[in-house]
Picture (cartoon, rainbow, N blue to C red):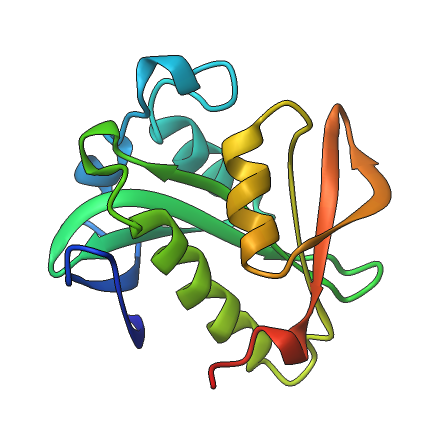
Length: 163
């Protein structure tokens, strides 16, 4: 379990858990709001399969108190040593509570504490204004790089360390 004492606006403790026999179904069923489907898959099950089959990403369950409310994943780029955050999906019924922000902050802190982590990166579609606002407010800055049709944003690891 990854925990940094970060809560959402509802006061719930946000923790990240490995995917296991007890939570994988709940994570797989996480679904975004209908209007977000142009940016995200219909269910987090797609991200779980990507983690299992692609062997690059590691999926984590996002929990509010003890209930699964979302999915996020991370990976390390062996070419340049950067760490990546991807596949953030908070269930539509749980959105608007700061849960996604708390989940990203928790994962940022955990990644930044890794000895070999110099930079944390992520990508999102250029017209995903909600993602742009969230990640910019957390200190990520757009780079000149792209991942397919997505813009890449980066944050030095030292800026992601918990205060």
